[in-house]
Amino acid sequence: MVAAMGLGISYAVWAPGEIQTRLLIGGLIVPLAWGGAMAWTLADSRILRAAAVLVGTSIIGFGAAMLKGLT
Image 1 (cartoon, rainbow, N blue to C red):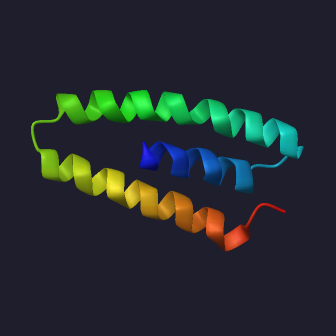
Image 2 (image 1 turned 90 degrees about the vertical axis):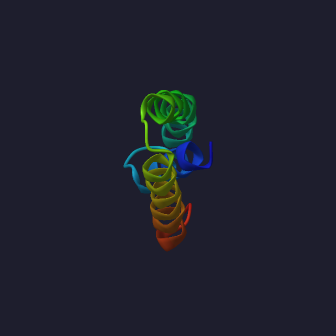
Image 3 (image 1 turned 45 degrees about the horizontal axis):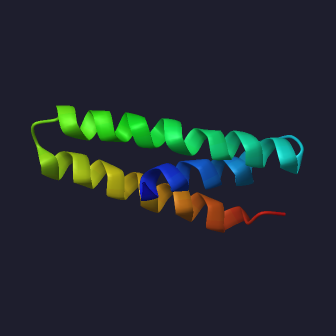
């Protein structure tokens, strides 16, 4: 869930366009990314690899959002 939120917030911050459109699409990315991450994690036989990728995605997503800020 945290990785999906990081992707959605990062999209809302960095994508071009009006703020309302960016927030809407960023909000729609979260459940899609969450579902994809859950399916991939359950299908992967190595839980540590899945955990490492999700933690890395969270750090990169929130880090990118913090670099720019929502202006």
